[in-house]
Amino acid sequence: MQVSPSRIDDIFASLKSSNAPGGAVLVVRNGSPVFRRGYGVSDLRTLHPIDVRTDFRLASFTKQFTATAIMLLVHDGKLHYEDHLTDIFPDFPAYGKSITVRNLLNHTSGLEDYEDLLMKQYPGTPPEKIPQIHDAGALKLLEQQTSGRFPAGSKWEYSNSGYAVLAMIVEKVSGRPFGQFLHERIFAPLKMQNTLAYEKGKNEVPHRAYGHTKKDSVWQETDQSPTSAVLGDGGIYSSLDDLAKWDLALRQHTLLSEAEMQPALTPPAPPSDGPAVSYGFGWFLYPYQGHRRMWHDGETVGFRTTIQRFPDDGLAVIVLANRIDIDPEALALKVADLYFGTKTVR
Image (cartoon, rainbow, N blue to C red; front, top):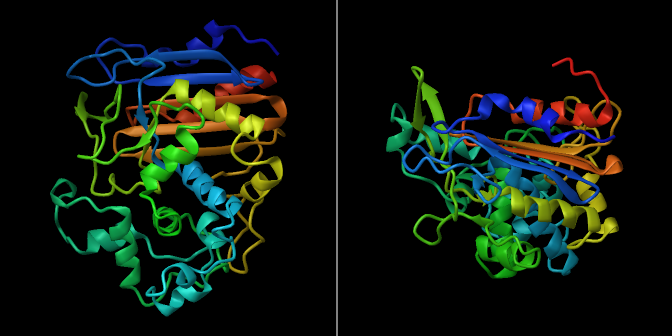
């Protein structure tokens, strides 16, 4: 179904501004971008208009890249999905003997939330006064525990800790810093020239958008939190131009074959405790209006993001925002409704 750009533009009309943060929208049909547009400004200091090159913090949208890094190591024969945490980190406590790489990827590991563990170390301290933690620090906190929240594989529970640990697994197995591995094996081969895992003091985000929150009707920059330096669960920045290349690589199986991608698109067996959850490796897999879908949202201080891919329909919708008062997933699905001829009820 053909959709006029003006109909898509209308969905994001509230983001149009020359002095407020906004977002960027990409629609891809059968491997080709058919709509790329920025709204609002990247920051309140320069008032630079958001465009197709503006880099947003992806937040948990990052997890599909972390998962791909692990899958590439499996492809190389250096890692296996059934390897245990203690196989990779021999000094990890005994409870890691039952946690596999697969458990980390599909959120069935039972690891404690490193964010909660961090905050318990600073009771009553304002977030802006808490030092930033990194992936290695998250792993260290987990190594100080004697057990997980539940036995691995018995339950599904979304885990940022699992993806911080996965980043450290990439470093241990590859012998390279996580950000360097991402660059060498994913971003550079796909010519995603403005995409990176941001490490303050080590690199700079090109065309950077800064996060914002509206307080008392006034926009304030809220760009970093104590957990913003953890890379594996949410530290990648990217742009519409680069994410179009990412979508094409997924469509054409550029990095991993179709067979190698299947584990990422296969939800875990129903757990013994709680309902089954349709999540693969870095992708939620719930269908939408009868259409097969692989998707993920991202949410962190100042940013909201989403990628919604409908492989059987050749459709992908990506929305990146540097403000927290919108729901990118709902907006992206309104765009999908236009292509599916679905009456929007949200």
